[in-house]
Every structure is written in structure tokens, then in C-alpha cells.
Length: 299
Image 1 (spheres, rainbow, N blue to C red):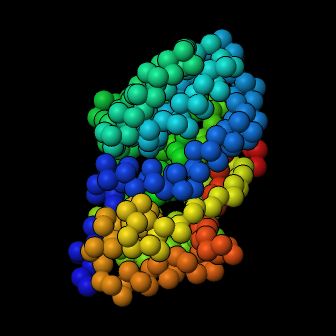
Image 2 (image 1 turned 60 degrees about the vertical axis):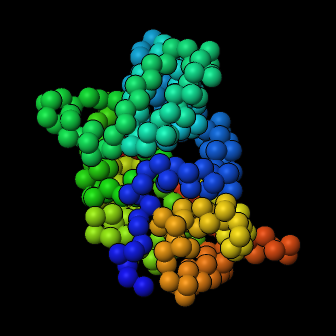
């Protein structure tokens, strides 16, 4: 099996979005994030912003890889509830995700009063290049990168850049897989699936903050993915989920049969998953939220 035949998922943003939404459903991703948004986010982010900025301010937000907006828009609404208004700049490379984001805004228009959404179809790299060419360096009160920094070329540089984009007292939120999670273990074990132009960043987020001497707090969140359908070769949903977890397009159709079986065996092993008595396989998807407020020594 030649490695070149494995097409990294990140080469196809719209197919990525399709597989992601299967993953989101099977992991109850948005429900978990919603609970985190309603319990942890107000204390760890909103209250800290209120302490540092007048409530009659317009809060500037930057969302990196905000997807279809389920989390991003609600964080903006939580902040808007405590301030005069919010300007939310969104960077997302997948057109289909931005279409869903626009639909979400249109359907929930009343709940988003006082929020100005600026949706841009581009990557963080393109955003940085454009700002550099224009000779501008916009500052934000809040920047979020939720499961979106896995493919940056240099994580240390990216964290430093995003921190530099904060207003004094502003907050950077980075959510990433825990390095002990099954999904992170899978990606590290099979990192060779990604070619030289699409190599997944292997660096731990914690190390990037530490290397830049940026104080942070970290909150761990338990998360599980029901991957039972992955072991049913007739399940279209299962095949899409395998594609997302392996980060390879059509992994079942393009990988050698022995490699496909090896990956599924590892996914179902005790290193990655928990097997229930009824046959359900729950994949470990624990993640960490790193929260850094500029100009504080809060750790």
C-alpha cells in the first residue's frame, strides 16, 4: 500500500465538514460544549472580561476555525449579555460550514441582536498574510480556537501571534485534545497518514504556552465518542466516522485491508476505547481548555 494513495482529510474542507458532523453527533460534541459554555465559560472568560473592560464597550472577538458556529455564536451571545455589543470576526476555510453559520444567524436573529458577525472564508495563515500586507494588526478582547490548531505549521509561533493579537486584559481560549486521549494517541500512532504538506502538529498545546512564557489555566473535559458503527463495514455513517478519526478521505476504500484492520483494532483497544457489556464501543475524546488572559500572572 503506497502512502501517496491516502488522501489527508484536510485537503477537502467540505468533505471534512461532512465527516465532522457525523463525529459531532456520535460524540454529543455540541451538547458537551454547550454545557461547558453554560458552566465554565461564564466564570473563566466572561467574568474576567467584565473585570477588565467597561460594560458599555464593544467587545471584539476573533474565532479561528469556527465551523458552523454552534459554539462560537453562543459564546458571542454570552459576552453580549454583559457588554453593549460584540463584533465577531470568524475565520473558517470551509464554504459549507460558513453557509451553515449564516443560516444559524438568520434563524436566530433575535438572539443575536447587538452582535456584528464578520464571516471570512480563509485560513489563519491567509488572514495573517493579509494583515501583514495591509500593515495592520487588529486587536481583540477575546480569541477562540476550538479544535482548530492541529494543522498549523508552528504551534509556538501561532500561540505567540494570537496572544499578541489580544488587547491588554484580553483572553485567548484554545481547546485541544488531551494528549492522553484515544484520538490523540491514534493521530500520533498513525501520523504518517499525513504527507509533508499536511502534517498534523504533534506539539502539545501546554508546551506552546509554556515556551512563550504565557500564563494559563487549564480545564479538562471528559468526552466519549460512540464508535460502534465503525466496526460495521456496511454502515455509511461508520465509514464517515472512521474517515474523521483517521483523518483520511475514504480510508476503507483507499487503505490496504491489513492496514484498515490494524487501525480499527487499535481504535477498539483499551488504549483508545472502553467496551460496554452491550457491545457499545466508546472512544476516549477527552479535551483540555487552555485559557490565557494577557497582562495577568494568573495560572
